[in-house]
Amino acid sequence: MAKRKLALKRPKPSDPGKWASAVAEAKAKFKVYPSAYANAYAAKRYKAMGGGWRGPNNKVKRDG
Image 1 (tube, rainbow, N blue to C red):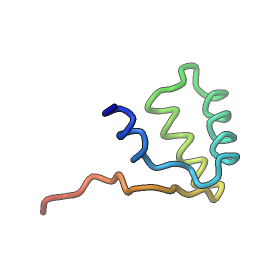
Image 2 (image 1 turned 90 degrees about the vertical axis):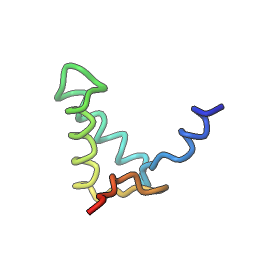
Image 3 (image 1 turned 45 degrees about the vertical axis):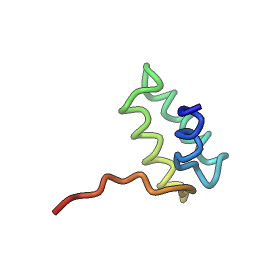
Image 4 (image 1 turned 120 degrees about the vertical axis):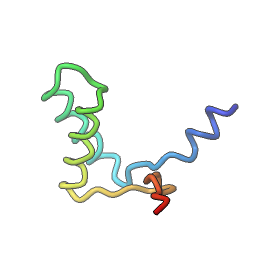
């Protein structure tokens, strides 16, 4: 049940079609998917295509 709550709070792409396209590009470019490099590439391509995110902010907050 805890996993389900965590999954509901993750940011989701606002344009699933663009996200799918970005993921397809990452899968073609990298031998291993999912990986940190491939996901970062997909996220960067998605943002370049004009995509955004829906849901809670998941950025790390600084103390100082």
